[in-house]
Amino acid sequence: AQRVTQPEKLLSVFKGAPVELKCNYSYSGSPELFWYVQYSRQRLQLLLRHISRESIKGFTADLNKGETSFHLKKPFAQEEDSAMYYCAPISSNTGKLIFGQGTTLQVKP
Amino acid sequence: NAGVTQTPKFRILKIGQSMTLQCTQDMNHNYMYWYRQDPGMGLKLIYYSVGAGITDKGEVPNGYNVSRSTTEDFPLRLELAAPSQTSVYFCASSLPRGGLTDTQYFGPGTRLTVL
Image (cartoon, rainbow over all chains, first blue to last red; front, side, top):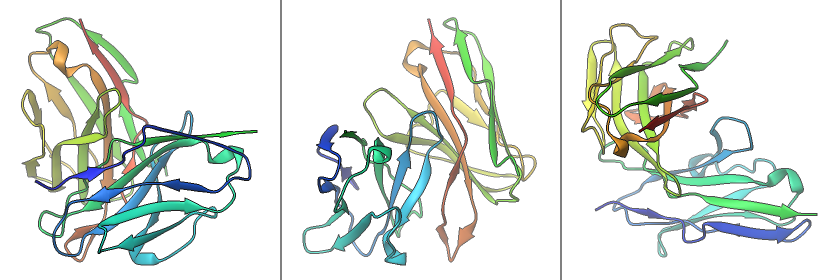
């Protein structure tokens, strides 16, 4: 079965510290991967996608096919980064997003 | 553009009651989706639609029905509400891109409690 795992429910760091939100997937082939974010009192929105190889709000995510991971990283966390983050691969077979359980990032001052 | 709108924001149902969750998008997106999110869990796909008149089941369709008579609207129907359907429901839409779904735009969610 195709699965995506975000092993940490809560990640708490201090402002200025590096952040890594983990995501592992069990898809075969070449999945397309996304990170979605939900800030407090806002709707879920796209943060970044691996195919664009972009950096959004200082976040980057590298696809590691060998480890089947797509971890989200930021070198210096800011308080405004506090939110719920979801890793979401798309299966090339079904074309549908599968969401991980989500990780709450808490950045303390 | 309002984007994706959902009504109602909150609803409490009694077991066995029925209701329709409304979802409308004004971005002329072909694809629309319904997800549910249970506490501590990720979003699970209930139903989706690739265009008016076309719907298909997702991962957890039991107890729900959908219709897509227009591009803009994608209502979700609960016929016989059960406590297991207590959840937050999200509607989303996207443009198709090369056979794969593009960025999904989400509504604000409907919090449903079944007692």
